[in-house]
Length: 163
Length: 419
Image 1 (cartoon, rainbow over the protein chains, first blue to last red):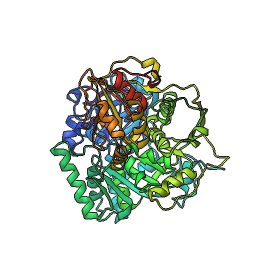
Image 2: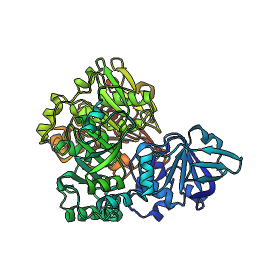
Image 3: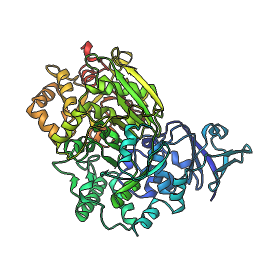
Image 4: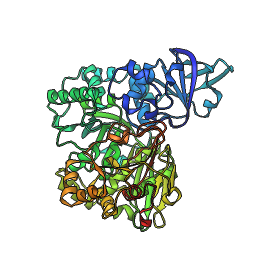
């Protein structure tokens, strides 16, 4: 899958309360969760997002609570890919399970500025900063997690195991 | 090569030979947990997988503790989904009514989790049971939904950081201070993807409640688990709670650690995590005098009977500043009852505290103590992220119960030894 959109930089240690505050956790509806994405960072944050935009986090993106509502709200906002220096553990599993593409690019996040035009090839983890012309290679997805992705996510993987 | 506690417990739950950190292993699980926020999504995934029954009716716990007593129509609808699922599946451990407590205080107390177990929960503070020597970790709802159906899940074997607590703590310094200090040293991502293993004379002498307070906050350093050895104290606690099984367990002498962190607690003052991250830790004296509007004493971190006793000892014969909302939430019905029989409730009420039912409530900005813009709260909870307890313009300081109680009395952050 190739994703082309605007980069939205959000900084280090973005916690899941910032991604989707607890007051919105009274629904499992991805549209409602998406409409309130990053409401814990800045009121009305999501208004800047267009379909297929890319979120760019810093260190430890997605730390805190285990709420799966966090990746669902990012997907619900129309963002299919998050690039970060690193991801928090529970969020990383959740992202894959929900079909949100998460790519670790370490210090190369500094090669992306807010509102840069970014193209991501999710198949090979290659990130092109169209604005600056630079290319970034993301760390490979762990093989076992790739298996879950290839199965079509954890729900499909579970379906096969139960069949 | 010797094994760490994490490796030992994982090894008991898999046929694969564990050789090194980073290895992916498929393990059976002893308990699968979800709450009123995370269970509805887990149930959605469980059904989407085509699962018809849970793998074991006695090994699934559904605890409606976050927004209960239901704060609004939407949360009532969510709990209804969980209740109907529990009935349909015949889940033994379903809690919602007069028997409900904060999940991570409730499950150990009821002997539902215990030493040597693997527990996965759709709640990041599932790591609390590491205090009992259980490999317990938080996951998302779909992982937990899959585990409810399959009775197994996958883990990446974590490298381990050993934390040695030595020395003799001063008065009003306890488990919460040790763990806040450790998070301050490691940073909120310092143990990312790793196991923390605690040892040293301080933890040997510590109660199981104290160990659970420390294990509870393993996630605040990014860790997968926070583990304690299983000693006689653990076995006695588990047996008294009605847990069957469990045996003494220590790491091998030649276990391999990624890093060893030594913390001498002798000169440690009470610690306070300042806004807006749990690793922004200072000594109470550096934060003394900061004006507060609210104090919260409770949660899966510090809502156990020991914590209530500590708060009561500070509040006894004193009055909460009349402009301060001092909210006390004993974490389970059993703790609530103990507060009554031990006379703590009278102390709390005489001091002018607000005592509420067991609930996670204000900790996550759910209900029962939400902050307005510009307000500050000192809380015995575990997270002080921006907006965590309400407005994005509010601030949360994390402390032990003695500091929270002392601050409620004076209206400013206060070292209890200076009252």
